[in-house]
Amino acid sequence: MGLFDKIGSAFEKKSCSICGNEIRLLGNKKLEDGNMCKECAEKLSPFFSERRHSTVAEIEEQLAYREANKEAVAAFNLTRTLGNGRKVLLDENARRFIVSSSSKWREQNPDVMDYSQVTGCTIDVKEQREEIRYKGEDGLPKSYEPKRWDIDYNIIVTIHVNSPYFDEIDLRVNESKIETDYSPEFRRYMDQAEEIRDILMGARAQAAAEYAPKVAKNCPHCGATCVPDANGCCEYCGGAMA
Figure 1 (cartoon, rainbow, N blue to C red):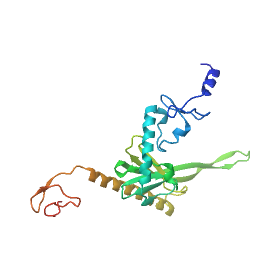
Figure 2 (figure 1 turned 45 degrees about the horizontal axis):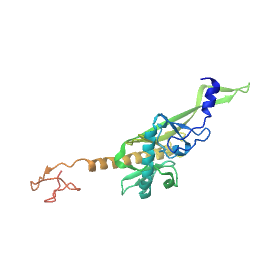
Figure 3 (figure 1 turned 45 degrees about the vertical axis):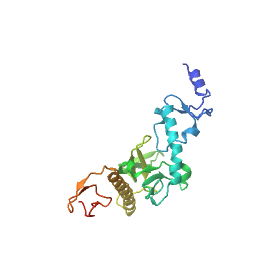
Figure 4 (figure 1 turned 90 degrees about the horizontal axis):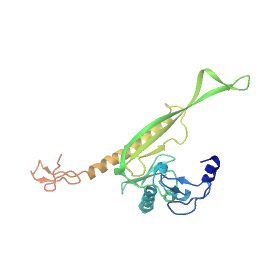
């Protein structure tokens, strides 16, 4: 294919393999076996990054999930907010959470996830370096000897999740860059990051314990064989079954 053939192919009208509408100029989002318009792409999860390597069938499956997710968003009852900017919003009664940076998050259709979908949560301090230079006599930037650096820090929380469409969510805890990693500001944001991690991991552990199969035990008080109740007590005598 020659150069002009490639240019002509790039401007050839295409139809969206999902909705069938004509794709506007420069609005094509390539799929593994088709094309997708910008409007359909905007309906995908904001945490999804494998569009280019997805088939039409896989995209249609995700869009069906995203449509059903609207009902979960409507039923979401916000009870607690964690973080700054991109926040973790909790529905502690339903044991679900969402991550969103919008104050009008219901309109954004954020992915609603169960606590049990959390597989891990990590904190990473990312350092950004930019060399400080001065203007030489020739008007060009020169390096100091030894080199000087402007160093900033960002505290990133990564929530690892079990989802068919994405496996992690990143959020920066600090609202602005932190200049030193020993300042009260750094400690404050690190405390917030640790709070997010501890709450999500604690909620995950609780959910895992509740979903774990119940095992019958012998009560040390009355000798009966039974499955401990929600408080870990014998259903017959009420004694604690350690």
